[in-house]
Length: 164
Image 1 (cartoon, rainbow, N blue to C red):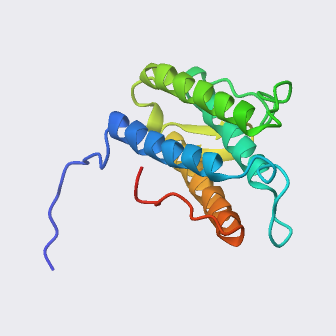
Image 2: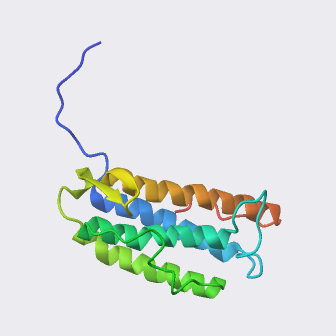
Image 3: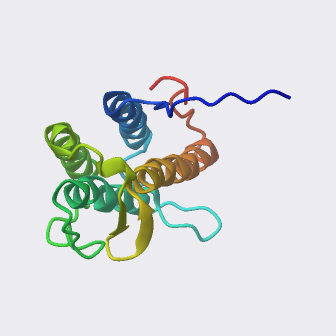
C-alpha cells in the first residue's frame, strides 16, 4: 500500500460548517412546530425529558457556546436562559429564531485558527473547538431523534430528516 505525503486539507470550511448546523436547526425548528401545544413540555416516553426541555438544552448550548468560542469567556452552562425560560411553543420558537439570528451574527467573529485551539466549553468539556462544535450539533441531532420518537408515539409523522 502506497502512502502519500499530503498537505492537511479542511473537510469543511467554517461557512460550510455553519450551513450544516443551521440546516439541523431548521429541521429541529420544524420538529418543535410539529408538536401539539399541550404536549411539547409535558409528553415523554420511558422517563425521558419532554421535547420542550430538550430544545431548551439545545438553546443553552447554541448561542452561549458560540459566544464562548468567539470571546474565549465561557459562562456556566444553563445560565444564559434561566431568566427567560419559555413555557409555550410560541415563546420557544421565538427564542429559537432569536438564537438563530445571533448565531449568524457571531459566526463571522470566530477568530482565525480558533477551531484548532483547545478550550473547556462551559468549564466542563475540554477539547479542540471543532470538537465542541460537533458536540453541539450531535447533541441537537440526538435530542431531535428523541422528539421524533415522541411524535411517532403520538401518531404524528415528523418532518423528513433529510430536508435540512
